[in-house]
Amino acid sequence: MRFFVVLTTLCLLSAPAFATPVSKDAANAYYQNCKSQSAEGMSRKSQDFMCACTAAKMMDHMSVEDVKMMGQQNESGRKATNKMIIQVYAPCIEYPARDHYYNNCISDPKTKTMTSSPKAMCSCMAGEIADHLKNNAQTVFREILTRNPNITDPMGALTSDSEFQQFARRKLLGCVR
Image (cartoon, rainbow, N blue to C red; front, side, top):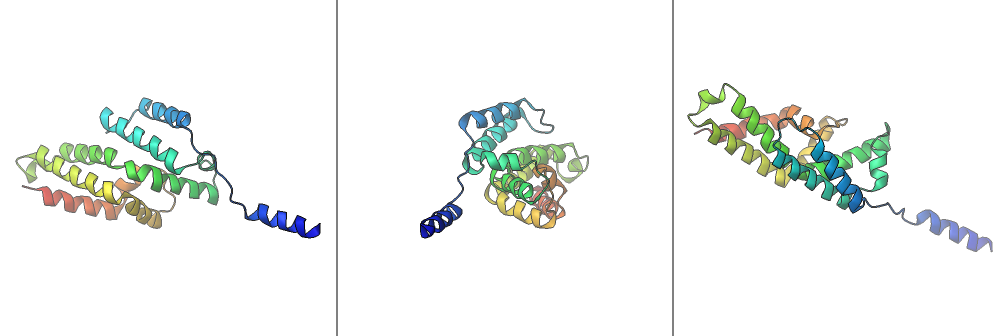
């Protein structure tokens, strides 16, 4: 009998904990809430793409327990937040990044001194950055998290990261015609 109790206890301790998946209803509620928020510097179309993308990624990569842990100010909360940044936001960041970099470029007075076609240059740069992020955002955010492990706002982290801003400047210069 003692062997059975020990074996049962070992099996229970080694059994994987099953996480509750984020349901379609929860993802749809997230999507609707996301779309209803004001998104400064982002077009409605880009916001819709971002919200739809993150809702889908949330169902694929997050659990209800992960989402609940994100609000905790401890190591578990930080791990859940990093998971959200890398696996949910990063694959979708191309949409707000394209708008952000285009809008900043086109509204910068220096842009007109660099080219006779500011819209083409800014569109080129924003497209280059968005394409790079589409393929590399998870790596970009892992690197940002090593430099700044306490980020909570992915777009803010991207736009304030000096290494990524150097990359953006190189893309801008590559688009000057």
